[in-house]
Length: 154
Image (tube, rainbow, N blue to C red; front, side, top):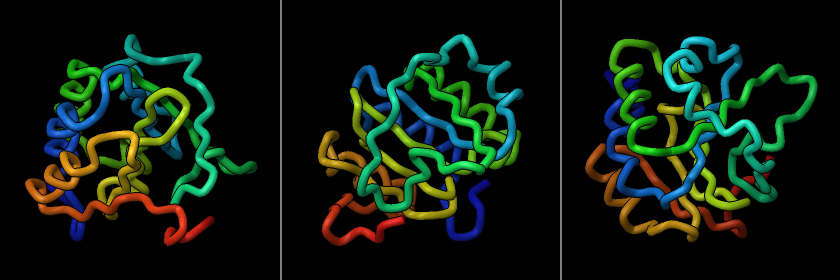
């Protein structure tokens, strides 16, 4: 069930599969310890995921400022992982999974969903932005192309 003003997190994760590049990494940022999610998909974790270069990102929490006690779980964004997370989202609050969701490819951001699933999400030109914007239309949520010169900076 989508939150007020948001998107259904399970539907988003299921539809995301076809919109992100092969080899992408999903970063779940959470105030807790991710223990339930780790039990579910921990085998798909990317323990040595590169530090995200998020300079100039619109609403990112990368790099995580101290003393915030945020946990980041990096996972291979494979269909198996996204489907398992979607099934988790079907029966749990999205806050049990993450408060922010980022997708990276290589060393750069491709998708950023701050306050998942209650906000608009941003896409970078590293992915087929038109496909992701079409995804947003299907899910009836807001999506914006990331444009550094017009984005609000943290």
